[in-house]
Image 1 (cartoon, rainbow, N blue to C red):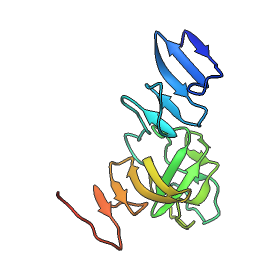
Image 2 (spheres, rainbow, N blue to C red; image 1 turned 90 degrees about the vertical axis):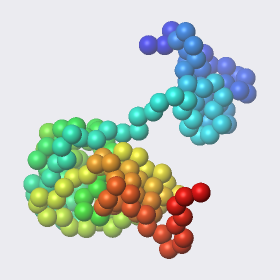
Image 3 (cartoon, rainbow, N blue to C red; image 1 turned 45 degrees about the vertical axis):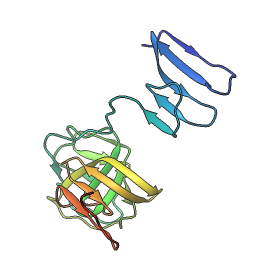
Image 4 (cartoon, rainbow, N blue to C red; image 1 turned 90 degrees about the horizontal axis):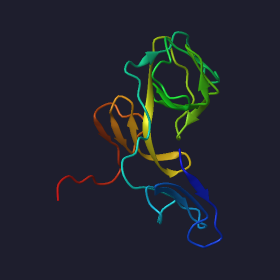
Length: 171
C-alpha cells in the first residue's frame, strides 16, 4: 500500500504515488510509468511485467457455438484471467467475465478474425500478449500455450511467421 499520493500542477507530474520510493507516475502528456518518474511512452514499465496468465490445462467447449453466440460453455474456466481474449480454432474473441463453466460477454471476431461456428470439444486457448498495428490488426501475439505469431492471430507452432514480404534471420 502506498504511503501517500500527490497531485501536482507541474508539467512533469500530474499524479505521483510513492511508498518509500516512487513506483508510478502519470504525466500531462498522457504517458504512464511504472517504476519510472519520467515515462517516454504511453506505458513504460521499468522492471519486470506480467502481461497475462495462462491456465495450467487448456479447456474445451462442451456445447457447439454458432457465429452469434455470446457465451462459451466449457469444461472449466479454471486458470483463465477474469477477462481477456480467447482463441477458438482461428477465431479470436474477447470476454468480460466467467462462471465455473462459461465465458460471458463475448465479442466475436476480435483482432480482425471472423466470427465462426465451433463444434463441441474445440480447445480454448488464450492470449497472453497482443501487439496491435491498429485497433483490430495484431502485429504479434503470444498465446497461453507459448506459441508466438507474427502476422497471424492463430500461431500453430512455437513460432509462426506469416508475411507477404521478406523474412530475415541472422545479422
